[in-house]
Amino acid sequence: MRAALVLDATRGDVARQARTLRAFAARGLHGIEAAESLVLLDERGDTATLVDVSPTPAVRLVRTPPRRADVAADGLASLAPQTGAALFLFAGGPGGTELAARLARRVRGCVLTDALELSGSAEGLACRRAAYSNHLIGHYRLPAGRLACVTVDASWSDTGAAAASSAPGPCARGGLEVLSETPAPTTSSVGPFECVEPLDASPAAGLTESRFLVVVGRGAGSRRGVERLAAAARRMGADLGVSRPVAMNGWAPAGLTVGVSGARAAPDLCLVAAASGAPALVWGVERAAFLVAVNTDDHAPIAHEADAVVVDDAATVLEALADMVEEHGAGARP
Image (tube, rainbow, N blue to C red; front, side):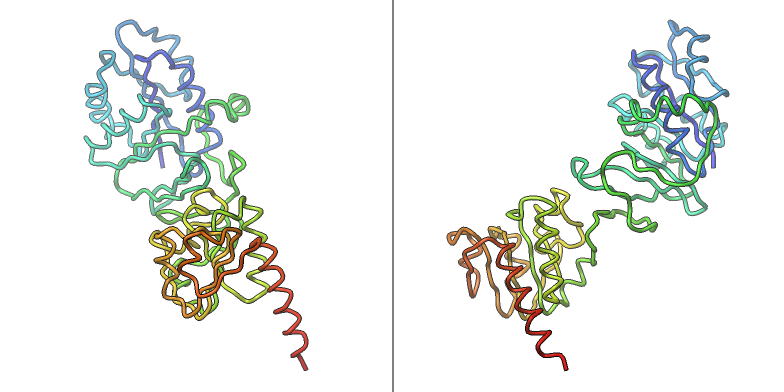
């Protein structure tokens, strides 16, 4: 699979664009050859300098008037069949995003922004990018047979540029690399969207079959707080669900969401821990045969929905319950 790297030299940040694309070609492309650079320039462009700064040895110069993304996209669309590229790659930012979107529209391709990593295969392109304000990582597959117009995440302008400069030219490497502190994927499968947090993520649909469910809310305070409550739930033999704010904060996988944004459960017993009880969450647990709210605020909305309310710290209560369950289980063994 071949990629064409597009530099827009009619803008003033061509050095940043080149640095970004050079780093990404060296370390962010897997199974994809960075075949050539397409450089958009106006009559003032210094061709010698632009050839030197381009991220690949093969360079094609495209004359275009400045500040006319529509004209530039027309030129790129006419060149696309000649390049033989399945991927047109742009540096991130408003200019790159506009060009990518305009080009995709003209060639009936597909567009995706802010890529952290791209892998090519016979099935198409797999892309990894940040989502939900960098709390989660999304995995996307772009279909084969359509030109992919992709912009590179801005972090590549500062990440790995020095390492990439020691290996110029086309580069396709295997293996994956995490570019930030976001946890690496726990599975190699690529779907429309996937959360890759360290907690075990059961599909939301599976929570609808749960008979004993613990739902953790934003009051857990942090990912560590959620993990502490999740450990207590496991010790009790309960399934784990979370409220939408917990998933949005990146403290647990999106697949564990209970409520309007996720699963609607009907367990025999449901413990809602450290959640205030927004209507969207209540919709997901209101069919429980017996609903218990564990919250430090006895006036929280969930208290009015529950069959029983425990006013205390959720972690303290759930860990005490887990101790009781384990003690009872140990005594019952032959």
